[in-house]
Image 1 (cartoon, helix red, strand yellow):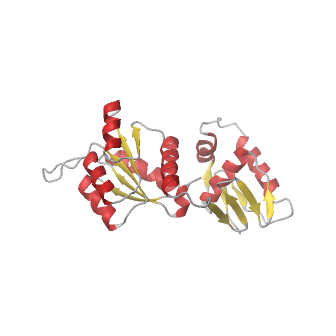
Image 2 (cartoon, rainbow, N blue to C red):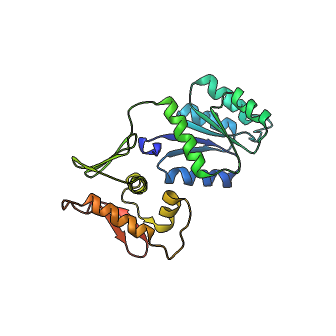
Image 3 (cartoon, rainbow, N blue to C red):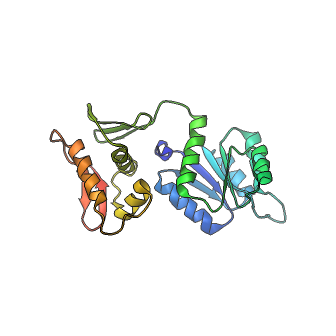
Amino acid sequence: MIQGMNNTLVLVIEDDERILQVIQRGLIFEGYRVETALNGFDGLARARENPPDVVILDWMLPKVDNEEMDGLEVCRRLRAAGSVPILMLTAKDSVESRVQGLDAGADDYMVKPFSFDELFARLRALLRRVAPTQPETIKFADLTLHTGTHQAFRGERPIELTAKEYQLLELFMHHPRQVLTREVIFDRVWNYDFGGDSNIIEVYMRYLRQKTETVGEPRLLHTVRSVGYVLRDD
């Protein structure tokens, strides 16, 4: 489940601009809205002006006008101001550092370098803790996915999907009208590269089309020649 489809706002406080941009691009691709800050003072100001749903916070933040405001202090102030989930992201990997971060109010702690799959999974877990509501429902045209139960429907007709077919359809449902390349699909659904000669995507796209168009419904999954595929209602 990709929480970004619920308009989730993530505040990323990170002083390394390269890492910040990478995280921002990844989050936006997953459907999240993103605010960014390069230091703790700016991060706290942005959190006050536009309260985020979750915060990704670096520990080692720079001084501003010779005034110290590291990630631990930002974490303490955010926690004192409310219950926003905080994921601390840092190169400090000792047990003592983890304890410090959690004691300062962080809900979770990840060590750099990190994997995006793990980062997204941890964000989803944090958001579930603060919003244990009804399972998310994603809709496009007359397609519906219930992500909590992994049920799929075309109109009122249930669609029986394998786990991998569901993952593939969910990816398209989170990025409607956006052309997804083969490389992106490999990375998001299979998490590794099958190689340029593999036709695994074509096989699964055929399965999905057969299951979503069984009674002559209009096609929603389209091929973009030499590029990839797109979910759209013509």
